[in-house]
Image (cartoon, rainbow over all chains, first blue to last red):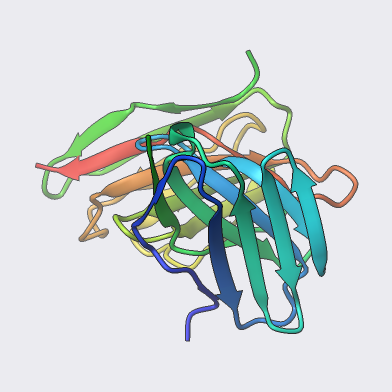
Length: 112
Length: 114
């Protein structure tokens, strides 16, 4: 079993839809959870950063962490064509400058 | 402009050749990382360095080598021992700010085999 599982999609939704992206993980020691967005042929950019269980909201984006189920989610409200990208979940055990463990990424297309 | 610069953007390698990918950052970050991304795959860690003159192997270090002689620079050499080098290579850096581990990425280098 891989440490982090993420459905690669592709996922195609109409403009304005609510998008739900998910990752599951096996290592209960993960405490820090991130979502990165990667446009085609570009480097990933950080979207959301959360610590432990709970919700975090930033504009149209909401990140949820459920440590008891080892499950994290990213919700995008009122999706726009500019949201079309690959979304990667990432997580780490420790604080500080340590490597992240990434999911495979989910490719999202928002159709106008 | 602060950021991470990777060069070249595209690189071609001949059989038996070593090639070096450049990564420079002017963010004053302590740590730097190299990841490899294959189609439909996530990012896999090749090497990372938390301080100058020190680096650690990642999950797929075989066939690669790095150096960290300066804080700003972390070049990656893809050696002839790496039999399947075609991939998108991403460099990242991070600074421990109040415990947060946020990595910032360059634009990547796409390596192909001739």
